[in-house]
Image (tube, rainbow, N blue to C red; front, side):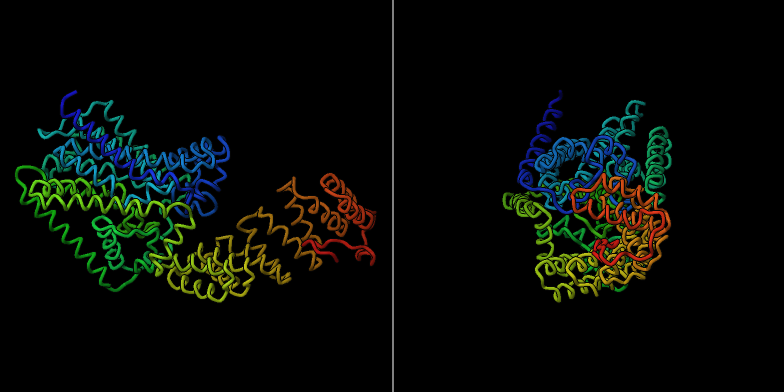
Length: 635
């Protein structure tokens, strides 16, 4: 091994060790925030067969999965395997993330050392290891998607650059090397969809290294036709897979509270987003798990922060252009860093299309790689100036490392994440939503309703907010606001079943059987086998003495759930009897007896069988017989 290779290996190992040591406190954490739904409560992680079947399902479990527009089969597979191996041992999941962060940090050094001075690559590795913006990706278990995709992405870049791009000019890639790059690209894309931009970045890397102009890019791509054809085939395969798995929903639902961006000019909001990017990458002294409206203004007018954001982008572009014009001896690292950031942030930047987030710190993980290289160069330049100047990069690293140590515990569990959210960004719509939930749990109903109203004003009529808030209000007995939110959700999206489900339950509590029938049928149009809606529809039709409709609903319910409780079959005794089917009533009685758990249950079954299992079922019950109604009460 050459001396430089040994130095690179030692430097990358040292930076990786720094990254691992800094994030070791995350091993004390549990499952937080999205971890709960994606890992802990995910039915696909209950066995190997279910896990394998989930690889052709949306990444996000449940009915919202398709709408979110995410398909990450390799992330699902990796998290599922960990779940089956580690169970509820959250520390093991965190250990995997911490180790992956160490691997990515080592790759930042190794890849950078391929075209930068070693000192700059080492400086970049130190900065990447301690940068606070990486806290969410590493300390939150589902950040595995960012870490895994970044590792495969950097391996592909390094493999391409090592054999194909040199200071003397391009070299042809062997078929084996092309296969390696394409395979890594496929792995990265199936881990997180934003890795789709790798081909564009390889063009940028080679054009930058060879100092080519825009007019030369076509010739560059044609010289590597085999590589780019392979990458294009991988991209098409991923896009087709997404289309099939997500039922054509290849773009995600807009960020919570930001659906308006689909219809209005986005430049004003983009200015706000760019301001946050600049702050998080240069001065990340406070971090937030939430950047929904309130934190970032979705607006059609210029705000001071939006103006600063746009001015910052223009200044960075001007600086990159100036550095290109000034640099004659070698390519401009500033220009490459700007190009890397622009290409890798594009899938989540809300520029070409509206995405599922406005800003999320985890999405800056891969874009920050080139920022670390540029900052590493700046740090080396300061280090070589004078002793006082050396203090600047040292202080920056120490402050950033301290910031990481302070913020890692905030990802310990969902409650700590929410407390941090409410304390740091109380102006966000999601924070008001969380605060409303806490007030409701504390019995402060009026304050909770006010907080829900404030959240509604900032998040708008978003279905998840409306339906979940309505459900919590209903559970707390606040029926009027719950009904109002559910009705608003139904008006906003009549293809979402959660609103009519809740309205069915609310109507049942009010014993408004006409409403129960209406909303349960609306639910069953979307979810034909929903057991609660079938049960309540049968109850409603029975109360209205529509015995045939009541029987049909109950029959559908027991067919869909043959192991259902004995009461379902007991109710069928009456319904079959009232519709002139005494033989069916006796059969239902036999099924109920096989499931009856107690002598009292058997007594009720026998009593109903006497009344409804004869040759002619009476229309009225004997006055001395107490029969449970279809919703469980005695009549």
